Length: 132
Image (cartoon, rainbow, N blue to C red):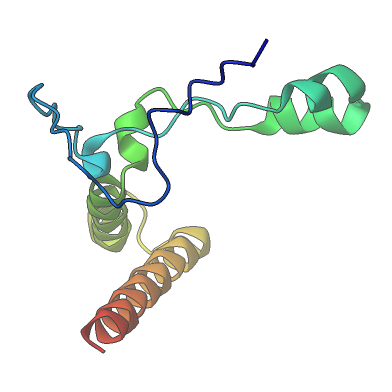
């Protein structure tokens, strides 16, 4: 009794006979730049079973900052929030109750300004690479 593999309808000595078209309407995917990042990354199941939590894992989990607005982590929103924070820190010494500016506030303002400058430089280099 011959084994029926169902391959008799395919002839290997001929090329394509037809192309079938999908008639269902295409559903567009949401814009990835407007989606907030996932709450937590999925760990592989085997790693979850074999890896026993340690004190280091506990401390790392407890020290993760709580972000209640996940939209803040999208690139556009993060950039605008970073600029607002830098502007607030720059304006703080002039509107503060104390006579002089705090060294910690001045240092934080410089750090945010440097971060903003580095991000602008990164964007410039990235656009140069895309242009060729």
